[in-house]
Amino acid sequence: MNKKIVKVTKEKTKKPDSDLFQSIAFLIQESKHRVAVAVNSELSFLYWNIGKTIRKEVLKERRAEYGKQVIQELSSKLTESFGNGWGEKHLNHCLRSAETFSEKEILYAVSRQLSWTHIRTLMYMEDCIQREFYMEICIQERWSTRLLQERIGSMLYERTAISKKPEETIKEDLKLLKAEDKLTPDLVFRDPYFLDFLGLKDTYSEKDLESAIISELQRFIIEMGSDFAFMARQKRITIDDEDYYIDLLFYHRKLKCLIVIDLKLDKFKAAYKGQMELYLRWLEKYESVDGENSPIGLILCSDANKEPLSY
Image 1 (cartoon, rainbow, N blue to C red):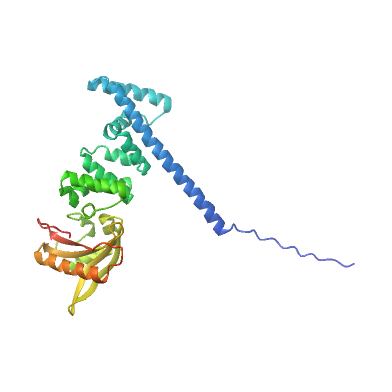
Image 2 (image 1 turned 45 degrees about the vertical axis):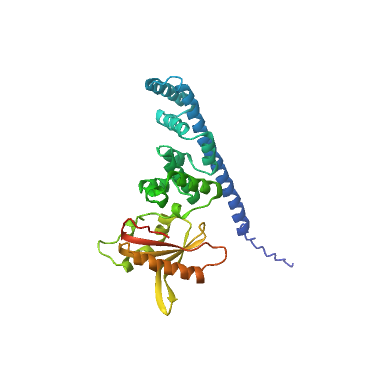
């Protein structure tokens, strides 16, 4: 009797197609992001509306004790009905947001994806121009709440060139930034830059400073702004058969120009300006491409004085 031998092989389990998985995973993540953005916008606008409603009620009586009593009673009832999260402190935040921002401003903020924590940080700034500066730069640079708080703590606005300009000039530059996403050099450059993170000793050379900046380049660029792109270190250029070396060369995407950084260990001297202008003329002639703006120079000195630091 002939036996028929049947070979049985175990079919290998097919792994999901990698490309298909990545595509589906991307769709899921995108959807989660849109939901998060929508929820954040709705919550921020809700809190502002709550503040606006409280404000109307509290303003019927201008006595501080009356307003405090209204918020206490409201907090108790909301907590009883909707659970934790409706304490007096939170309701006071809501009230402050309505006192600080108009409906148009709050809608603009949430539409540009600023979170309630961003808004809460900004709304306690008394100076409206300073507050608008941080709001616009925060939107442009996509700062996290923590980074926004760090920038405020490091007095970024006070260190920015524009803070020393007349109020109308500041308003016009911020208006231009808001309407056209157009940065001006005064909004970008800061005096002085905080380089504490470099960990330099009391005595150091320009080479040490440059090396420290390069070794911490990512953090240095964050301090300067996210639109800076590093291009070269000690870039050699030849003028009239003489070699010169540009300490650091960057490109700024939104200003659309090359940025030269020259590092000096002493106070600003007029000769430094002449040297910088020489670099800028050479770069404009030999390195700039069509559509770019003229290069900008930034001299970083260890000691500040009244001379301008950018050109």
